[in-house]
Length: 184
Image (cartoon, rainbow, N blue to C red; front, top):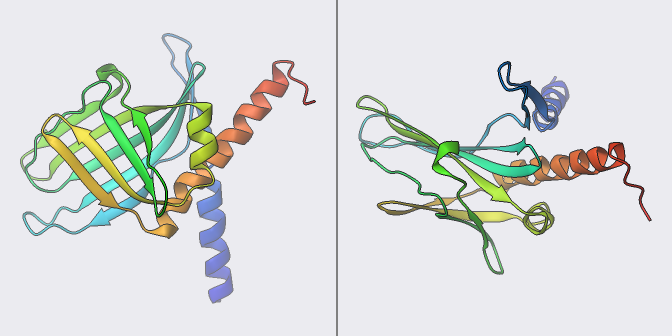
């Protein structure tokens, strides 16, 4: 029985890394994305709403983004400006730094009963993807207009980012083959 449960959990986690497709009815623009998955969660005392971070990978036009959705249980009001830094720190070695995309690609929701939620997209370069898909992230730091917030990421949760980026790499390779690229 426990083997069946383990297999179900593994297949769900692997399936969640596949790209979904969304076509805007009005503009015809196609966006591909992975489903959001939690990479950090911690209970807060103030109002029983946890601090949480989930992530997804988005492909919009020819650009790739790491999208973070952060829920802050306290009554914090923060905004992430265009160009603000996101630090992805491995257990050893230097941090990879991503820059926040335009504020048009972020969303802030604040309510008095459950704190603040903010979603921000960070542009990924090919070099970022190559580094992050083989790196075990141990900490992330999010810069915002009032300072910074640090989150410790457990190794199991770091795998979510790596799997999404590995799928992203496969997705880009498949797209390149469809567009006429032939490997050497």
